[in-house]
Amino acid sequence: MTYSVAVSGASGYAGGEILRILAAHPDVEIRTVTAHSNAGQPLIQHQPHLRSLAHLTLSETTPDVLAGHDIVFLALPHGQSGQYTDALGDTPLVIDAGADHRLESVSDWDSFYGGDYHEPWVYGVPELPVAGSKQRDRLVGATRIAAPGCNASTVSLSLAPGVAAGVIDPSDIVTVLAVGPSGAGKSLKTNLLASEILGTANPYAVGGTHRHIPEIRQALAAARPSTETASSDAADQGIRISFTPILVPMSRGILATSTAPIAPGTTDAQIRAAWEAAYGDETFVQLLPEGQFPRTADVLGANTALMGLAIDRAANRVVVVTAVDNLVKGTAGAAVQSMNIALGLAEGTALTVNGVAP
Image (cartoon, rainbow, N blue to C red):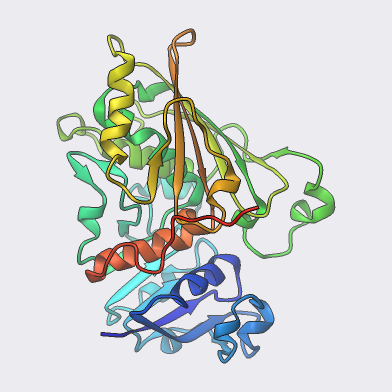
């Protein structure tokens, strides 16, 4: 069976990456691409690297244009997806790459985003440990999927094995991320101009204000054994995180260094075993051999999250360094991987573990 696909926000970075991956997918046909201010223009004018899709023209993003497809991808700015998802009730599968359907807590949405709150959908990070299983199990047969925030899924994948196994204390998580500006989207912003970011590193959203924080807390709370999840509020469960992103001059990539205290009485062997058990059989999330740590260059263009783990006994903390391509594993790759699972296709269809070098 060939599934018809519409991609909204197709002139942006996330939409373009979804299209790049889907262009090589044998089970889908990209029929419709939409945009807002760029509607009416050739897709190739805004995505000149997508040569195989040069025949497509950007349509206006409306519910009527998006309706009538088997699958709709929404790659829109946060707060804009809900107006379309409410009108796509007859669409068999809708995948939102924005934040509108990620958060379970209304108060978290109000505090970090604001505007109309929309119901949470199945979270699109298949490898993420959840109580007693993996998020993959919840994606099977899903009809509504919330693709992750790139920073959020990177940190969550980094630490969820330790939370699930009880070998770290999640009440004192500290994570610092070097991130590329493509994660901020394609809109013109002064702080993202080349003259503003080349040759410098710029912290932003410092002091607990980044919008991905509640998403991380939610994912880590879900990783805890079911006997420990009486409350739905991550803060009530002691999930606390200090999150500091730093904008660096690379177009793609996230390098997240996340640390958490070691749980009392835990051995070094038990710590590493938790991550090996979580990801030993995974294709797209890989724990590197002891003493090795990833570079963002190693994941460029790939749907992989590579991580290295260290045990700092002097500080009594576990250190996890994880690299992802924010546009692939962080967004579009996770969306397509989740689509494959939901439809019962081979999970890795159209996705690669091989990066681009140099």
